[in-house]
Structure formats: C-alpha cells, structure tokens
Image 1 (spheres, rainbow, N blue to C red):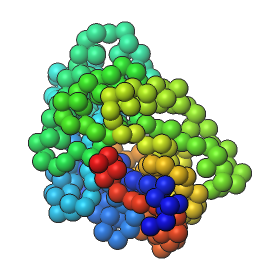
Image 2: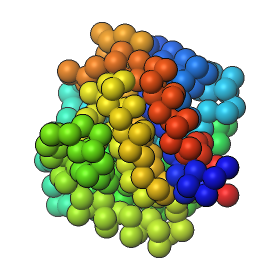
Image 3: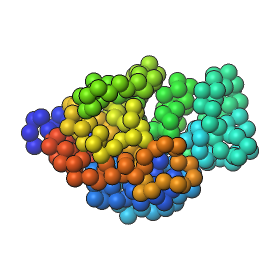
Length: 286
C-alpha cells in the first residue's frame, strides 16, 4: 500500500436498509458484487426482518442504525407518541415544525427520548454489531436530538456517527458547472454535532458525499466523486433499490440508478484507482 493510498479511507453506505425487499436486494447485490461496504438499518420498517437475515448471511457487511424520527414507522406504539405521530401512526412529516415542538414541549422531548431508546434496543435485539448511527433526513443534527442520540448511544456501544458535511469544491470538481446548495443547509448544526461527537470519543467522517445529489447519485456522478476522493475518512452514501414502487419511497429518487452506480465497472475502476482503503466505521475505529 502506498503512502497516498493509506491517507484515503472510504465507507460506502446504503441508507434505508429494511425499507423494502427491493432495497434489501440492492444492498446485498451491491455488497457482494459492487463497492458497498455498509448499510444503515431502519429497525421498524416493513422489510427489517429480511434485512437482518441478509446481514447475518453477510458478516463482511457493516451494519448500523438508521434512526427514524420523521416520515416513517416508529418502534413504540403510536399511542405512546401522540406528539410525534400522525393519524396513520407514522412519524410526522412536518420536520421543521417537529423540530420546533421539541424545543417548546417537554412532552414531545420525553416521547422522542423513549422512541430513540426503543430503536437502539430493537437494533441490539438483532444481534448485529453496531457499526455506526445516523438518522433519516439527517434529523440527528438538531441539537436537542443530537444530545439524546449521544446520551443513549453511549449505553449501546455507539462508536461512530454520521456528520453530514459535504465539500462543495469536490462536487464542482466531480461535475464542473454544478451549483449545489444543500451542502450548506445543515452546516452550522453539523459542525456542532461533530464537536460534540468528538468530545464523546466517537469516530466521525471528515466529509460525507451524497447530500446535494441525494436520490440522484448516478453512475457517472459516483465514479467522478471517487476520482476526486479527498484524503481522510469519507462516507459516500446512496439510496439503492432494484426497482421503485414500494411504500415509503422518496418521490423522485432514482433508486435503480443509485444501485447501478454501486455495481458499475466505472465505479469499481475509479475506486481501485483512488487507492482508498474501504470498510465500515468499525474497521477504522480500531
């Protein structure tokens, strides 16, 4: 291994593991035949049991917890989460208003703390090692939620957490003329999360790729990002599925394209040329 190669470390993650059979199949195929190294499990999603079974059959796949606090299925009964769920029993979709409610309402905070602990407990019950923690819609950057996750994660052996910070310079090099904006939306909260996580002794990536082009990580974009991979620890995350049309899918997401990006020869060649060492967060936390 060259000195340059040793400076580049990469975790390639699929979010929403357990959301559907199509997502789970894509995770398995992308790990066995592509560049995927990790997946983040939604413990109460419809296909979570199938995801866990696949993960147990792939011990080289590093699996973490994808906390759900918005727009998906809670782990506790909805009746115990009246401030957090909607009439359908799902976690509320009005993320901004929910964030404000957490600041203003002690009851909502108590309910969310209980739900977060229930999701950690459900993950522990799978028996899978906990590689990392992140959250649906990156809601863990909310300072109140971050505090809950850091406090609860300590009880469950959390060692790494995603901090969603993305370099606009890398995006522009990968796709000249690109004008990404989302990379800045969570920057102040992400910086605070990074500082708090590091004080807690957690491993955090130096940068994350996948925010600005979430749902549109095409094979060409992923290969270009890999060709411009920076030094340090990078997390590249996608939302692959073998097909769309399943409950809970995000409108407009190109799931099949993102799956193709993980198994394409172009991506595999670009990763090899980068010289990056790949694995899960737990591999780099040792």
